[in-house]
Image (cartoon, rainbow, N blue to C red; front, side, top):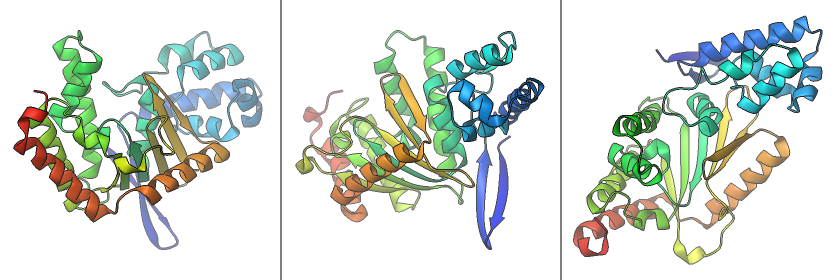
Length: 293
């Protein structure tokens, strides 16, 4: 069961969600601390040997951050743990969540603020079941039905964090191209756009559409997420085809925050963006011959 931890600071209430896999990550964090101390290493010494920051080791030991496979293999060599971490580093990964997205998933679950840019698809947190199914079928054309449905369930379950009245503040910059790619066909896409419009009208998400007329923009290289979590430094997640990386280095995060600020400056305001989204949905109804079934 998902747990919620309430943190009170300066008379303001902040909250941190913890997903069900947190206890497993905490167990491996305890193991990491035990073996580090048994080896007589400080947190900084282990961080240097794993080629990560001291804060990263601290977050892994407290269960905040997931141990990635490459770090697990290195930890096994450094701490002489006979493959313990490499064999088990994925145990805390929820079913249906890609390994390269696992750390970002953790951050998403405990974030108090999420900012995102999407240039080709509606973001995963906002996808309908039918839209998500069409995306996965396009990426995995020969995947067995049951396996694909597990991915769909995991993708749509992520959107559940927006149902909580204390959901994270969520802002999206959406390339206008996303509105006009009929993923899943005319009806699926129109339903997806109306779902997005409902979330906007219900104040679950703020969406700014980046219009075609802008041309080249700062995020042509790919999608971007920015996470703000309680009592943690800000993080940025960048992604490519089947690869992704969660960044917490201050210089890199600042660079991506500046990039996002430039996108926001060029995007339409929320009301104009909502009107464009609803107009795109109506266009799919009015001109079905323009949409591929």
